[in-house]
Image (cartoon, rainbow, N blue to C red; front, top):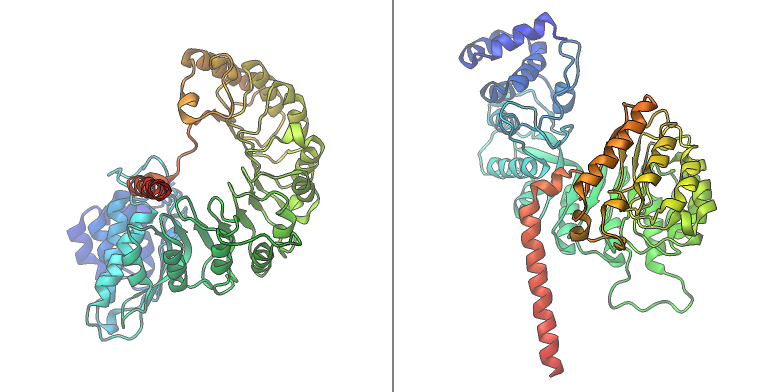
Length: 511
């Protein structure tokens, strides 16, 4: 639905020269309407002009692009390169105006959702890394410009920093000159940085402002680094924390305490307990055997999101998890990489029972689920009446077992998304699990298609055509990895080269 006002706005912005001549006569409260119409039609010249002349004290991108009474469409999943570049350049133009014409105080550039397929006319996306690079370069350019005003514009941003843009981001986050854009970092994703670079950019970003912190993939941290990281400012507003693989490993030079205590782990747990707004914690691929209670026990706020996939949890950890305060509040849970039904059948059942009133998404990838486990798994899932998403890729289940499981899943009224593994029948007999990427991709496509059609038929017969099913062999689409894949590839090659050089040096020393 579009109002007559929005249709009129579209007509005006469709002719940029006319729009430019008319803007001075347009009421200030119509600027948001003109902006959304310009974004919808990809009129980048008009967008830049609107930002340059923005007459209001706030510009908030997410709400401006979201559904409204004048236009019900949601444009927040359009990360259109032309439009977003025009926004930032328009902000720069606004800064360079005389003090008398400037009213803008806050520009919130958050709220964009990065998706796999762009719906904008150009089809060219500007991802989070690209948006960070553009904003940082613009800030650095403005720092060189003479400007009479003393009031900078605060720009709220989701920042993605890697080795490729570290220098320019660090300069942009530094002290801003008079009249420039002052970046306030609400979320920070860091990849391909060394620990020193990570700590430096965190100091500049301001830990007290951060809501989300993602340290991923190629940032090599150990427990000593994590302790240093969390000690910076306390992160009082942090809602979500993601740490990379092996983040809780002891530092290389450390020696185990004789009494079995781990001071570093206790220090990290204490720092986490001070984050009173923390509700999301991602610790996948860290060895946490026997450590879960130490880490999560002191937390003051119940967690809503917990990722402990491939963390080598033992019976003590699972027992704590099933009985702790967090269990009754979990909305998203990842337990991948653990043989749950084999090793912890009763505890796993109790955990899902505790989480059932709130649980929306459950991931059980590579959990060693076999045909003989389907009954117990179905029973445990049966209590999760609010479950919307279930992912269990990488499990050696046959087509027959999957049919039984799908029949049980039809009873979950809110279920909408299921990611299931390639059935074991489609691989050569005796194939080993878990599989590497090469083995995973070598299956009988015709047999898979037939079984997948049978599974969809199970859903249709039960009247559950509202459940979307798929088998993404190599995981779901990740816009951040997609955008920086070339840089990550170069980083991995350099790391491999360095490892070979070190190995060669050791061999020569042995000789």
